[in-house]
Image 1 (cartoon, rainbow over the protein chains, first blue to last red):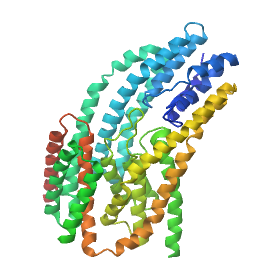
Image 2: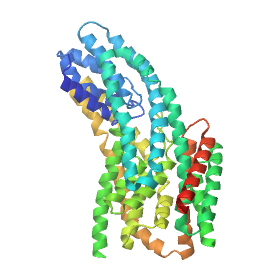
Image 3: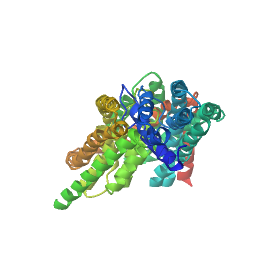
Image 4: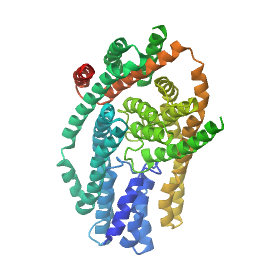
Length: 247
Length: 239
C-alpha cells in the first residue's frame, strides 16, 4: 500500500526526528515530518488525512534510534486502518505503550553502553593509529547504529506489535553490561598511557607519570563521591601547573 | 601579518560552518557521532591545518563527556561545543605563532573552553523552549487544513542551532591570535606547568570516563587495565 520509494523517504526522514524538539511537544514535529509522505497513499480523502495527522499531535518522545521501530509500527497500524482492518485506537495504543520502554532500551544500550565503549576504544587507539583512530570509532559505532536503525524500521513496518518480541530476542541488557566493561577497561588503559607516555612532554617523565596515575585513581573515587568532572579537570590542571612551575 | 589575518578569516568561516553543522548532527539530524569530541575536534584541526591539536584536544573532551547522555527530556552538558571551540582555539594559537600548537596551547584551550559544555547546555535549553513556537504553528496549520505545512515546521527549528553554535565556534577560532599573544607573555615556568597540565587533565578526563562507563566494577577493571597499559608502555620504551 505504501510504495517502496515512499518507505525509503520515510526511513530517511526518521533521521530528523529531533530537529524540532521542544519540552512541550518533544519529538512530535519530527514524527509528523517522518510520516508525512505516507498520508497521500493511505488517505486520499483530505478529511481522513487531517484526522490521521491529528492522531499524532500528542507529545511523542523516545530514543531517536528506537523511533525507527515506532514509526515503522505506526505505519503498519495505519495501513491496517486504511484498509479497514484495525482501529485508530490500535495506532495510538501501539505508540503510547512502546515509546517509553523502547526509549529506556535505546538509552541503556546506545547512549550508556555502545557510545562509551566505542568512544573509549577510539581514544585508546590514538597511540597506535593517530588521526585515523576517530575514523575507526565512527565505523565501529555506525556499523551497529545504522544497521540497527534500518532493521528496526523494517521490522516495525512488517510486524507491528511483533517488533517487541524481535527486540527482546537481541538480549540487549547482556550486551550493554559487556560494553560497559569494555568502556571502563579502555578508559583505564588510556589514563595510564597518558600518564606514562605523554607525561614526557613536560620533561619530568617518571614523577609526572606517577603523580598522574595517583590522580587518576583518586579522581575516580572523588567522582564516585559526587565531585564534578569539571572540578576534577581544573584541580588536576592546577596541581600540574604549580608542580611544573616550581620544578 | 596580512597572511596571518587572511588565514584567520578563512579559519573563522570554516570553523563557523563546521561548528553549526556539528551542532545539528549532534541532536537534530542523524546522530552518527560525527559530532563527538574525538571526531569533530580532529576534523576542526584538519580544517585549520593542525590536525594533532584537534586530535589531542578532542581526546580529552571525549573522555570528559564519555558518560554524558540526554535521557528523556533532560540534557547532558554540550560535548561538541567545547571540543570544536577548544580545537579551533588551539589551532588558531598555533597558526598565529607560525607553527603547530604546543601541549601548553592545548592545555590553555581546554581550560578556556571546558565551561562551554555547561554554556552550550543552557543555550540548548533556551533554543528548545523557543522551538515550542514551531509546534504552536503546526497546530494552527492543522486547524487551517494545511497538513503538508505541519511537517515543514520540524525543519525550521534547526536554523537557530546552526547559527548560534556556529558563531561561538567561529569566535573561538578568531580568538586564537589573541590568546597566542597572552601565551607568549607567560613566564617559562608557567608554560612548563601548562605543558604538564595537559597529561594531568587527560588522566582526570580518563577518570571521568571510568566513572561514566557505568560498569558495575569499573574502578577494579580500570586499575587492572591501567596497570597492564603502563607495563606495556614501559616494556615498549625499553625494547
